[in-house]
Image: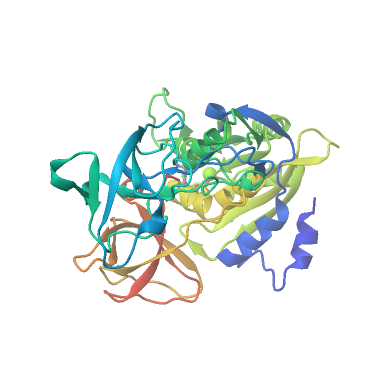
Length: 431
Ligand code: AMP
Ligand code: MG
């Protein structure tokens, strides 16, 4: 586990007062370490967890060569260019049991989708491609040129071959992966334990739900967005409420969070010139860097590790996010989410940024990364287009609720003209 100073020394041109977005990702990737403890989870519990070991298939899927269609199975060597083929139907093969008869040249077996291919037969003609000779349902005829030998047959092991890795360590269990594991007959999967994340909001002006409104105070929204973002990631959440801006309460909250959680997320109290104790307490209890990130919304952020008690080793990773509600969500999506996924042991590639035509001109200052709330849709010509969803103030959550992604205007990028291509990060289930 590296200290802030060690990581800073590894990075070329690291300036905590003007950190580009890529620098943040690079730093966090060096700060966090993946979980080690794993356990076996019943399949229904494994959804959203991360595989701790490769899964080697104990069997072939499918277990036998079988038909991909309802039709007639036959020996494909009889197919000849330019010649119709007539075959006598000598039996019926149903899914679930092998057809007991014998058949050969000049013969075929009526077969259902999924039924085992009769011995020696390698091709299936779908039933809609045949006609019956002289109205005789025992004699099928297929026109030439419709099929090649091997068509409409699924090979044993073509999905997953016995002894081969079917799933890999580091993959998050999706519905498809859950189904694949089940198709291998596995009723449990070895996954990393669930990441525990504690979070609290700071600030004397922040009201919890249930408290009466008072002048100058606002209701806490950050705890709810952070809760939602963490639950979408599959983390175990430890909600620690709103913590008042005094040293005693803050110290107790940080200690308690560090004792229970792998990561701590706070909001508020990290901007420059804050007349509060949050930063001082982070500094006192841990090894913490205070950044000004070249981004908007966002900018201030604290990261490091916090000790659960005086003299204890630095354990829980701290993400001290800004206070403004949209800044919280954007810094979470841009930086905290990838770091938490790394801690969860997940090595799945992040969804790629997509390119969309901006439907409007966007003002953008070069020298910082800007994230704008956007709605991506399909234009009449089939290309992607994106418009902003309204007021882009860093405290304006309503425009976030109308968005399906973020327009990412990169560090060196300047103003955008209507029609220009811009990068978009789709929320895609993260929100
Ligand atoms: P700070 O970084 O603490 O100065 O907070 C920046 C802005 O975000 C201030 O306007 C705060 O009132 C607001 N803010 C801080 N925490 C929260 C919260 N939990 N919910 C909603 N707004 C907040
Ligand atoms: Mg504050």
